[in-house]
Length: 320
View 1: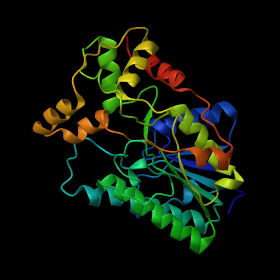
View 2: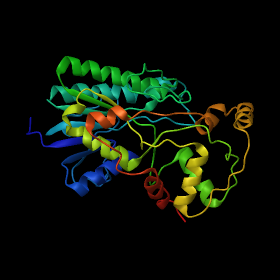
View 3: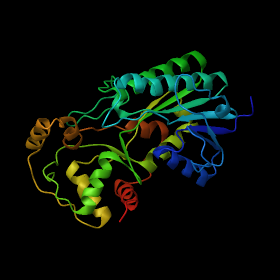
View 4: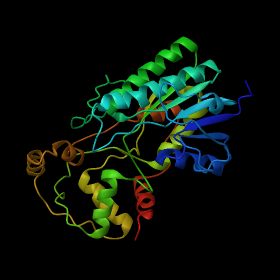
């Protein structure tokens, strides 16, 4: 095997991967970007290799050659409008079979450390008031995506036990930043356009988020920090927000007030349930908090970007 000189990043031209590759390039960190389809420098990294589809049959040999660590970001992500006949089968094909296939090949060629980006959905979908998820909590995934991430974590730990390859697992909550999509982007656009939102009374819930740059910073820390070996870390901005506070601070980041009016949260949830959108409403009305105290103490790490700065960077990417 060639001398180990680099970190392999899978999913390198995705939302998180692109940000990580940009940070690595700016700091001169040796990195090989792995993408699905060959496109000239699509990740922005100097060293890029295409491997095709990620599943249990992917040949990772060209990508792994010369790499001492792996940062596995590629995944079938949680989707709001699922079209697969059996979503769990599809999530397992990429997130379990694909991950463990990469893990086995990495261990076989002597990769020292495998950093896996999992999800807080391994812990569950919501937390009780005044309780935050910790890495020590019993997993309780409730959807196929969360189940597939848990199974991948379990398989990687088994590979680590059998081979000695170090495995680091990172479980982020919702990640936001420039180019964020889905529900967070919809909220930003609503505030930007001055759309009245019935969320002024949603002040008692608390939700954890993580700015894209904070997650990238933690992942880079995990590449070689001695204390990260074979650990599981939760990550967030370190400041949890109610939905009303999030919207107000998005407005501040844009330089315009969020237009909120009060409707009791119980009434909002009732209406959403009638429309078959109860789960979606819970993402606005319920709690989901993570405790990052162990991440801070173990790695001597603190989120370098504040919530307000993270929101400012996110809204700066919106079209005017």
